[in-house]
Image (cartoon, rainbow, N blue to C red; front, side):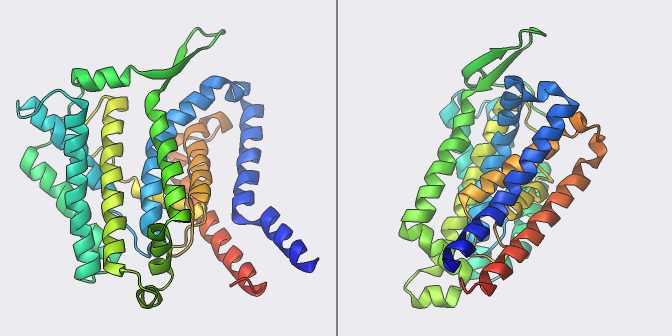
Length: 337
């Protein structure tokens, strides 16, 4: 009975449930301040806003669980979104969704391999290695291809942009709110990654090397291979997400995604990922992304100036770090670890 009581207490006061409580309170306050918050339009806008954050957070989550960290994905994403359009506008590519996403993925593979070499073979600290990659990617892109902004989409990407799952028309204002089909990408990604991390040897290996590389090696896991998989996956998904960004935002610049790493890492940490590795999951990361998205996109409804957004995200990151530490200590005290 005592064991069941402890398990119930952990479930109701755990990190994930605390995030749910915070989100419920936030939504109640926002709805009181602005009743329009509860309209379908808000859900559609939040879903669109969460597409990039969710995809970036899931790929970063895999790296963090493996015991590393990747702060290069915004710069890699900028390269991946810029190179295909640069090639197309210089008559070096075809107007095809497969071409644009294919080039972006290829860029991701190259930088993912580079990160894997720096971290796994050269044994550089992941933060230093990916900072170096970020500098090379961001600086090299501007130096080689320039800083022109592309705001006109090729026909194939424009056609992709026009495909919607549904469109909501507000009866009071008459405004329409389309929900792009690209919202399915993070949903499918979350399902696939959750299944891989939970039910496959690949997923178990990533958790194992994040917990203790030496123990994982003794258990038969190929640590180097798993590190390469984590960093290549992160870079590839970041690159594909960058092309989704271009499609939805109608803009490709050399700096569009720079600075996103703080928000993404905050979402992962708030969702239960420990920066020491070996802990975390898709469910918690989803909750972290939803909370971050709510905070970023609805502060105005609460009367909070937009200049305080970064401060608010910093507080959320601090909250996640504290909750993760407290939860780990509680589980340890109860003899669960």
